[in-house]
Amino acid sequence: MSKATVIHWFRKGLRLHDNPALVAALKSEVELRPVYIFDEWYEKNVKCGPNRWRFLHQSLTDLDKSLREIGSRLFVFRGKPEEIFSSLFSEWKVQRITFELDIEPYGRERDENVVKIARQEDVEVIQKISHTLYNTELVLKANMDRPPLTYQKCVSVMQSLGEPPEPVAAPKQLLSQQCVSPKMLEAHEYDIPSLEDLGVDESQLGPCLYPGGETEGLARLGRCLERKDWICAFEKPKTAPNSLSPSTTVLSPYIRFGCVSSRLAYHKINAILKKNSKHSKPPVSLIGQMYWREFYYIVGSATPNFDKMIGNKVCLSVPWDENPELVEKWAQGKTGYPFIDACMRQLRQEGWIHHLARHAVACFLTRGDLYQSWEAGQKVFEELLLDADWALNAGNWMWMSASAFYHQFIRVYSPVAFGKKTDSLGEYIRKYVPEVAKLPTEYLYEPWKASSAVQKGAKCVLGVDYPHRIIIHEDVYKKNIGRLSAAYKANKLLAQETLDEDDASSSSPPPKKKKGNTK
Image (cartoon, rainbow, N blue to C red):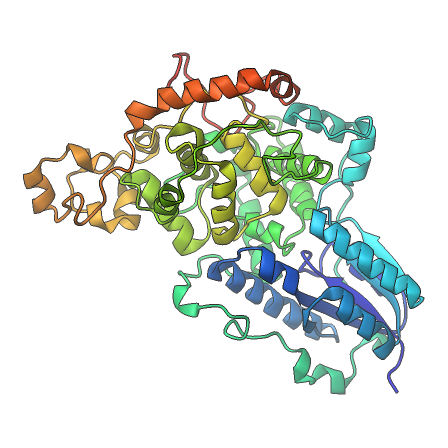
């Protein structure tokens, strides 16, 4: 007969450090059984590319290793959480289940169902907040139970609540009665499935530049913290979207999966800033980047249909064009604009691109050039990004399409000029778009300007070796500004509600004064 147990249910918080729900599970001197479920809802409803599958698999493997080092292990299941727990509560004689609070729509519904089942089985339920810096409900309450619809307002409300809670320590070693029995430690039916078993086509995997897991995430954070002067001087708009090595932290995948606690990162970075009188400030500082994450989580948690245009009260209704063929060429990095294609190919190969590269390709797909819905781009990013996060993905796409939160729609990223600012020699393009690599530098960003002889000599004949431009930027961007202006006039009140006092408080480069400019 099995003895009484307590379950800690891992979802996003794939770590031992700063895991208050895990700590709460250990208050009972009974066997701890950490559980992870490959939820079939996500497999059916969320597009997840092979690189993110690998990152998750690595994170779970690292977590299992860490748990075994303190006397436990990870018990892995596939299916519906409600059905799995309905069985486990009685089979394992569960006294308590603990887990991290989830603010996403499906997560809330799922958790409500599990809580209901637990109560029916007389199982205590403990939920703790640790995925965000702040309790989103407290922020909403402090703003008269409404989401703050501008970044500046959100930061003001958060700061009125004081500093985020300090992270809690990781458990070092379980009590003997909390350890998993030797028999259960070796029970292979609970092992992590292989990528092949999960249906991942491993031939589609790109280079593993950012291995998943708490161990790797904490090491990356540690390396960042060693660069104190860089942390103090950090300003997102001044970093390069097309450098061959990342010009930012690349902590986002680790924070997205909870391999690294956002609260730990915040307090470690803030401790460095407090010791230096001169340092950058939000919204462009590293702390400012973490506030952006909170902003989208808070607004997303209180806005139905936040990931859609229709039924989304904060999103402008825009009659976007609908051309799946154009979207697919953009997604595959075959637009005929080498800078845009390089960004999209890096994303597909590596699972990460710089935030300003995301801005450039998002603007190109939506208001800048192709005039396709931001929802189409959101789906592609959901598949390809290691750090794809429901609230941030939707919020950033609304931002860059000027559908919400950002309204300087006359500022359009040039698919040629923007990349040249930080990579005039085109080394980034040569790496990710090898078809154009042999062109003279003057044509790397604009291969259509090369003569037929130059194209042949560089083995880059347009329409044969590399595609013609799918759209002529200089012909369409002003027209698109006019179309979006009309949408704004039809949605004037909503536009004002999500307008920051300083709309340049973004992570975008400073605006030019010329009307209808492209950067």
